[in-house]
Structures are given as C-alpha cells and as structure tokens.
Image (tube, rainbow, N blue to C red):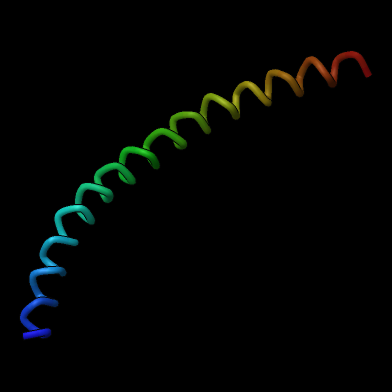
Length: 53
C-alpha cells in the first residue's frame, strides 16, 4: 500500500514542478534583457569617465 501511495504523490508533484519551470523560463528571459541594457549603460559611463582623465 505504501508503494501505491508514492506514485500518486509523484503525480501531484509533477504539475507544480511544470508550473515552476514555466516561471523559471520567464525569469531567465528577464536577466538577458536587462544585461544588454546594463552593458550599454556601463559603456556610456566608462566613456565619460575616460574623457576627464
């Protein structure tokens, strides 16, 4: 009986796992978008900083 209880528990865990994966997929998409925006910002800051010296 204990074995039969385990399979159902795994099935219940599967749905939440998929939902979390979708959220994780969206999260990674955000960092990449921010990275390109942050990179130009840093370059812009570096250029002005180089001008004074």
